[in-house]
Image (cartoon, rainbow, N blue to C red; front, side, top):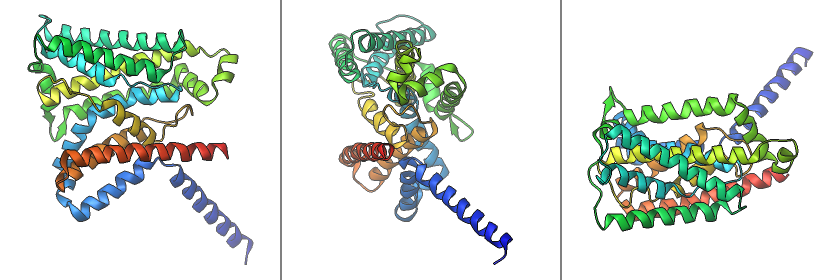
Length: 328
């Protein structure tokens, strides 16, 4: 065999190995989505119509927006379970009529509320060394209790016109909610890739002790991450309220759990410092497609609950497997 042929064989083997390594490195969400699409093509081909796929994307947008903030917290060895409480308060502020202000002012109040909740969570996590799970879980319970108490006096009502427009309108075939999702996703991806804060996130997640020793501002990074997370939870609540068209005491109830599963299935490891925003976005779509597929075959809400449990279990297995790979 000539030297040129040997070189070509080696190049081919190297290319195949590189491709295999790249495929193995892909998050589980990519394989799961591909498998679901193939199953739907065989069992429920109507779900693959462009109109229905865009409708599922619209349903996935609130979760996709929430996932952006959750992934940031997880990369920093933290966690945010307060999404449901934040969404509930935002829904009540916007729809109850307790606050007689114009719609833009109400939206501004909700955004400031998100900043405040994120800062409070970060304060307890960093200054009092409390567990992020305990802090954010306590926050969701407190916020839910407050809204439940106020709702005894005045129930939630219709959502603001501007949010209904965003949640229910299309530009051509593309829902506006999907445009909002993309508009939140791309700038955040660029910010984490190009900014100093993005390098802080990588450093703290990969090795917190080494990052602290080298002078990386851990406390400031946690504050920024949790404020971002709560603000994205507020944006997610805007999309939910606009899509549904009215307030509800159950709105956003499964947002924290689904966002946690989507982040892990999307390839973001807890405390790894690494992970992009595209993988979790694909996982958010995968979850919504799963729920719609189960509904189409007649399982409905029970099927959704079983699927949520299975997805969380799969996410835990994926996280454990990824941890073992890093250990070796």
